[in-house]
Amino acid sequence: MRIWIAHHSDAAWHALRKLAVAPINSLLYLLAIGVTLALPAVGQMLLTNAARLTESTPPAPQISIFMASRADSKATKDVSERLRKHVGVKSHQFLSREETLSRMKGNPDLRDVIDALSSNPFPDAFVVAAADDSHLAMEKLADEFRKWPNVEHVQLDSLWVRRLDALLNLVRTSVILLGVLLGGGLVAISFSIIRMQILTHRAEIEVSQLLGATDGYIRRPFLYYGVLLGLSGGCVAWLLVGAVTLWLRTPLGELAHLYDLVFSLQTLNPRDSALLLGLSASLGWLGAMVSLQQQLGQFR
Amino acid sequence: MICFDRVGKRYPPGGAALSELSFEVSEGQLVVVSGHSGAGKSTLLKLIAAIEKPSSGTILVGGQNIGSLSRSALPYLRRRIGIVFQDQKLLFDRNVFENVMLPLSIAGFPQRDAAQRVRAALDKVGLARREKALPIMLSGGEQQRLAIARAVVSRPSLLLADEPTAHLDRETATDVARIFSEFNHVGVTVLVATYAYELFPATQHLRLDHGRLLQ
Ligand SMILES: Nc1ncnc2c1ncn2[C@@H]1O[C@H](COP(=O)(O)OP(=O)(O)O)[C@@H](O)[C@H]1O
Ligand SMILES: [Mg+2]
Image 1 (cartoon, rainbow over the protein chains, first blue to last red):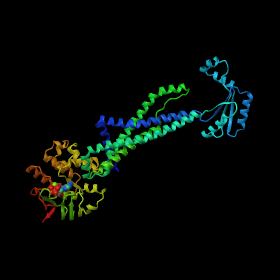
Image 2: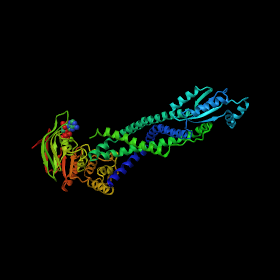
Image 3: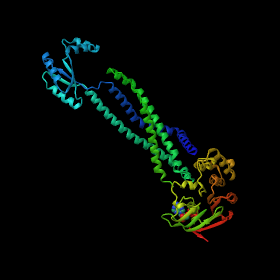
Image 4: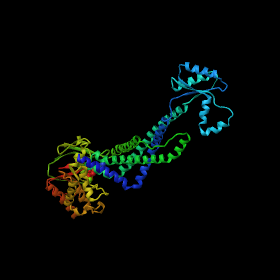
């Protein structure tokens, strides 16, 4: 056990020294790995932030029905009655044009515009919650409403949420794809760095094998080096994500403010940070392992 | 200690480097292996250390059949054998002390005892004062003695040396030969491949000629 610990601390120490001996080279390696990892990591960071944003908006999908302006109170009552009897409608709420007008006047930006108009521009409206709120069912329902007399316009309110959701799904898939691709890239980087290390330590490896070194003894320092490369590269990526977050926070916050949203971009959460570092270390190890497998086969 | 039974070695695609080689070496011998260049001396030593595998026949070292040794058992055989290579195989980016330390760190020897052993081995070959020197700064004789120190530092019971006196002047060669006979005196079995067999007080002499043993 003591031998085992001594071998491992030896190998870890060796790996650290290797990084320190050639600081410029090491810095470039770490930058290459860091940038590689930073791309999917930034994607993940943006995703979690976007997910936070959509969670804070009401997801319950609604259908708005706007009456034609010529419709009288009887026509409106008629629609209300139809909605009450319709099995596809869970609940509905009537918004009179007067109500809408006074609500809109509450918005200081709009008040002047509205005051300038000679008459109330808003129609009577219904807000409908559907019994089945799947997208298809709601589309069908909306189509049905459109055919009703005196109905001017029907709108699926939650459409943008659905669009955003679909968009987020696309981005999520892209981030995973990017992660897989660039993770492969990291393995390749680690592979070729370790390959070079093995080649420059050829004599040492050969002599060690002749003097009775086990495969484990030979591999260990290179594996540590691979893990250290991956891990440090992961740290660089983490810092890059932090920098991007800081950099985007102000402009994104201002943008969000324009939409009446309070939003502050957050960097990677602890779970994603741990995932980033764990993955980068494992991928560094994997690259080293593959390289060793390929290179050491040629000795002996 | 060592037993060859009708051993042959063929390097593809060339002819046979060794053929029908049978001999025994018992413990505590000082064996000289002589023969012209290309006779198969190095090959014989490499077979003992399992650096090369025999093409035919069986080789026992310390009762173990080398031919049937698994890859994972190989390192442990090598640790019991001290080898002075024909080309020495010193690490030129490590100093004298670190070169001799290598077999001990490979075997996982405790650090403190290891340093003492390295010093004892260097003392024995007369390099005690050159610990910090790099191999490139040593003379030919000193490099050879460094290689010997590395071979004996883990106190193997079997010591193999491949032309350890080549390229050395007469006086230095005699010096190096004396070191081997000293190790032999304390019970180490020694096999030396050399042209200069008269320098070694051999107890057994294997003469090779084109891969065959001369009686
Ligand atoms: N690795 C090798 N590949 C092919 N032929 C070899 C190899 N090593 C040695 N030989 C051949 O085997 C024969 C014996 O070589 P060696 O054992 O080195 O002889 P010695 O050490 O007595 O000079 C020679 O003919 C040499 O050319
Ligand atoms: Mg030879």
